[in-house]
Image (cartoon, rainbow, N blue to C red; front, side, top):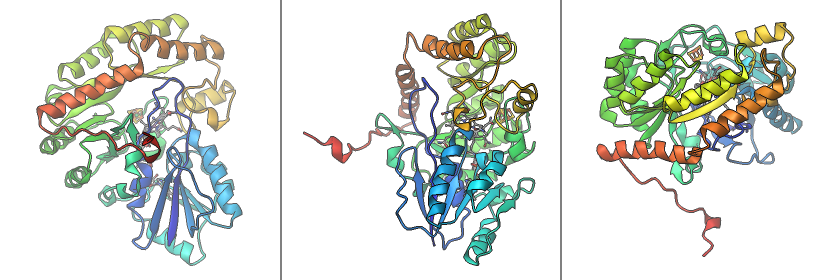
Length: 417
Ligand code: B12
Ligand code: SF4
């Protein structure tokens, strides 16, 4: 059976250095498909969709709210051609009701162990409109090695340098942060994958640089210790979300190849100053994630925050504006207070103001978003800082003999001379 799997394009953050990472949801999903399904994967962020190519069934994998409207458009086109379309992925769960208007089938939940039934129903003309497994998680052991073979991996590079490969060692999160929908998606239940499977998957990846996309590694100290110990012999270099602030954990993380961490910088406190310093002490770089537009954010506060980032010597920074994504407390609060003025999901990129802030006008917050990006990258532009970050990983690789020059071959149309 020819199954066309599509990952629709989305608008990137305004001002961020444009780079495209390989998607993770679709390749993990593909590993859960029955053997007889032949997958033709299209990431619309790097490839064009050919709507005329034959397909028996179409799947659309949607991660972000900012992707969902394009996903609906794509589905409508295939359905006009009488090809059935199934939706899945994070944003499908967050926009389940609206998505039903554009789908033959909406799959909610994790795919492992469910696809034999869904595809058998499809073959027998009994495809259901909705399969809802949101509260019924498959066993974490059933998550298989992602099908990276379906990706056009050469195309994921930044100025010729191969990007990281994505991998996850756990699902769920025990925290419950204000702007986040992970609780709704995964329950407040941290579910680590069996370490031997994680190591087997990491070993199988033909790339020394990884991104551990787990929500936060700081979930369970003993688990982190075990994970990093297992990773040391692999000599991979990797980035991830937060790591526990603990000497043993940070030391093992560094030995296991921790390259940089995405860490939320939520205020200008000594707590944050120390948190960033501790990563740096262990040779781990930090890309700060800075959310603008909370109720106590004034113009002065935001400007002070940007100055603070220089003081703590952040290696990179990503600024976003508070965005009321569906199924978050932020959404409930702002929606109930009638402070949301755009429900156009294309505006939900995290770079556009869609609500009325408390201490600023929407326009002021929008300009402060640009101020933050411009000010932070004024002296050292983002491609320079990115180069410095890459230099760090190359130095680490040269030190342990894993460095391989990764410049891609020129594309045909570039061979002009
Ligand atoms: C990795 C990640 C990223 C990567 C994505 C890389 C890439 N190329 O895909 C990067 C770093 C680029 C990223 C960026 C952003 N992200 Co992000 N990201 C994640 C993260 C941590 C993991 C996603 C993931 O891979 N999960 C693991 C896979 C295996 O799970 P899955 O996709 O659900 O797939 C399973 C099922 O859904 C199913 N499935 C998947 N596809 C399909 C298809 C079909 C047909 C079927 C049947 C089933 C199915 O099968 C899979 C196996 O069970 C999530 C949090 C989370 N835990 O999900 C946030 C998350 C998706 N991101 C989020 C946000 C807010 C962002 C940003 C907008 C802002 C920011 N800075 O974080 C930016 C984008 C800014 C922009 N406009 O450019 C929000 C989503 C909010 C929303 N409603 O849009 C999330 C949920 C985190 C949160 N805090 O709430 N992100
Ligand atoms: S923001 Fe990160 S740590 Fe907080 S609940 Fe969401 S996934 Fe967990």
